Image (cartoon, rainbow, N blue to C red; front, side, top):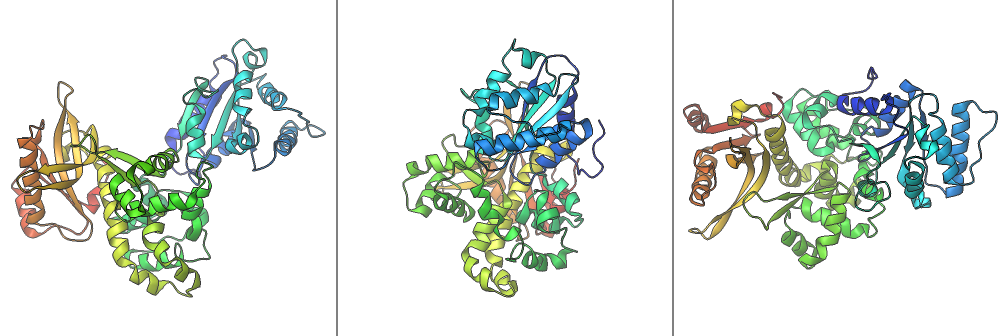
Length: 491
């Protein structure tokens, strides 16, 4: 099925949806689940699917159970050109009516914002489970492809897990992700790599942040970036101004929003390990297990195991706008609301923006590029894993943080160390950074790490490289220099 011309990318998602919704095999009604954080274009995808196939789309609201049944009856009557709204006393009858839409042909039926309905009627997943039970005539005689969609990631993640009623029922489980940094640059129409990196560090890859929230206002060039930040994200008149605060409100699991904002603030301030977060909050490390788990279930925080220490974990904020809010906006929130022009406030925030936003984001993009986009000419092979790590230095009684640890698989499928790298956003990289990596490689070799002796030394530099470092890299194939231009060049 041809993808709508106005749809940007989403080739994989469109193919998965159309294949699921139009599969002609007579296997009865089937269930699919579509999830993803807000503003990623899920509703646009599913509306486009229904328009292209003649399917039925119902967008739920936060409402009582009775009102939702009434609204569904009216929407279904409009779809069927019925002379009067349909009346449903129970969801059992409503679901069967939806299944009846597929008596003649395969047709998609979409319930968007499904968590709203379940909030009003927690039995709804069990009702759908029973409606789709094998050997049930209403299910067997239907060719409906029922798609449940929602943005509450913690809820949607549990819908098909553990002992949930719908576990094992779904034939499609599609998560609509944010755009990666390469696609985001194309979507925003930014050709300068450094400007694209900076914009991505502020708003990430959420499509709606350009179209609806910034009203297609993109930086005209590198010289316009600061003014763009002031007139969009830092302006109280734009939706972007409060969006990071509202992202937490979507998740029903986040009861104590103050605590979760504090945890996110701790991570944004550079406290990426459990002990550092606990110290920042003045709490015990064990007290953080629940809030960190909830934030990970919501897709707002990711957990990354240390490449060299089994008992060490790094926590990172998954949404750049949340990092920007906590690192830059939250400390000056009251001033932003009162200022006629936020230019001076933005100028005073440059240190936090560079150190707490751009530095970590550059490392993140470097890891993603290394894992998913770098060609074998950089590292000699394709990586199987890319993370960060901590290396003990017993002689110096210290430890060294490694920003990018690249692992591959040898011919016997054993993990081996392909490369170790350091990423610097602001400062130019020189021989000192190279010597640090050499020292770390020696420590890893002494530990007996497989592949450490020949691991490449990679300098990821947004601020450029010294002439001496460039000369050293030209004469040594084990030294790899990766600039911003490379990160925005897919292989």
